[in-house]
Length: 187
Image (tube, rainbow, N blue to C red):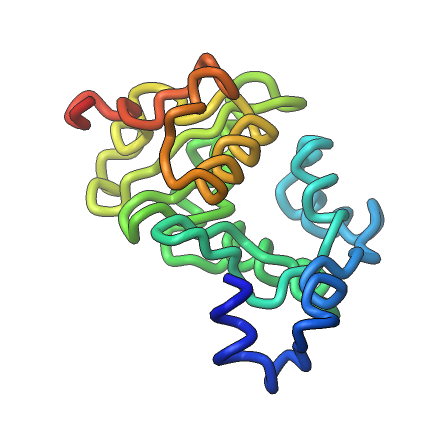
């Protein structure tokens, strides 16, 4: 996105060729204490790898956009508001949370990307929740985990951004079901 931001968003974000990475990769000052109000409201602790991701750097925009896949961003001075919005303020938040899932992103405008807190809460699987089938409750959850855990998800999506394909997904996350999360998805 560097070329895009420098051409179209440089003035808004104060970006130049010389300061681009310094601005885009600005270290976050988010700490453990910033997650406490969210965790109290959820009545559970968020997984450490998930929190570490949000404690690492700020984002320029409300969402990280990888082209069809969006995850909550972490804008400076927003105190995790984008993450909180996914958790509590999307139209289906209470339904999704009621199923033991924590939404933190959106895939192809149809599926919420969620932490599955029904199993290992320290390293939960990543599943999808199908919006157009939301009335089906548990049946709207992907039939298989989309990714094994948050770190594997981030590694795979980063690799996709770098290489433009999912050829390395099986190596990066042998347990991924990127193309087969739902029975009706084709290989």
